[in-house]
Image 1 (cartoon, one colour):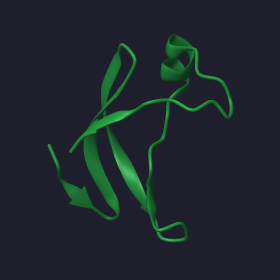
Image 2 (cartoon, one colour; image 1 turned 60 degrees about the vertical axis):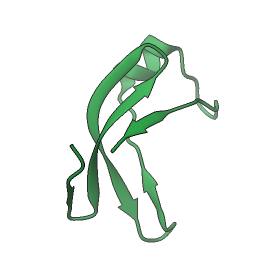
Image 3 (cartoon, rainbow, N blue to C red; image 1 turned 90 degrees about the vertical axis):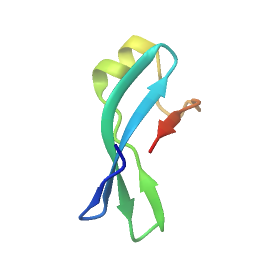
Image 4 (cartoon, rainbow, N blue to C red; image 1 turned 30 degrees about the horizontal axis):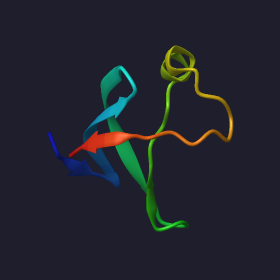
Length: 59
């Protein structure tokens, strides 16, 4: 699944009972990867703004 293209890397993400295929994006300003989190996942897992969550990424 790991395929890097134009600063993004395909991953399998898991938070709680939710698991989905997505991509993480490299942010050159922060020198780190960003994981976009869809509203549907946030609502399903009860994630609030500024809340810390445990995320598993399979590359």
